[in-house]
Image 1 (cartoon, rainbow, N blue to C red):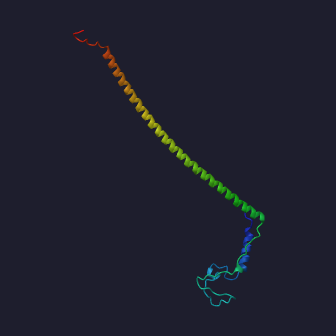
Image 2: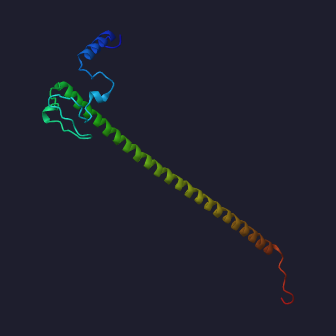
Length: 164
């Protein structure tokens, strides 16, 4: 059996409680169990005063439960240790989360820097390519100019007529 109590013993106790309870306590009508502030005719219970509907009554100090201080020291120490351990785990978790957030932020910053660097490198490569093509164009035009000058030098020069 899984439960610590047998059904037979439970039912036996329930029937004993029912038989020993005052009349009206075992009904399903709560107004017969709890006073609802109505003076019932013939209610002659000693010290009974009906309350006005909705009234609140403060219990006297003597009727409240006293503070229980009889817990075993071992149980109290264990509970305090568990609270301390959980607090330390929570602090460690918060520190790890803070570290992860700072690492994520730094990673994003580095990625942004890398993207900017790559864009700058691409821009510089384009500028270099433009400079090279411009230099090649200038070189071609200089070579063409030199060929023209060489051709001019190779051509026979016309001799001046007459005197000489």
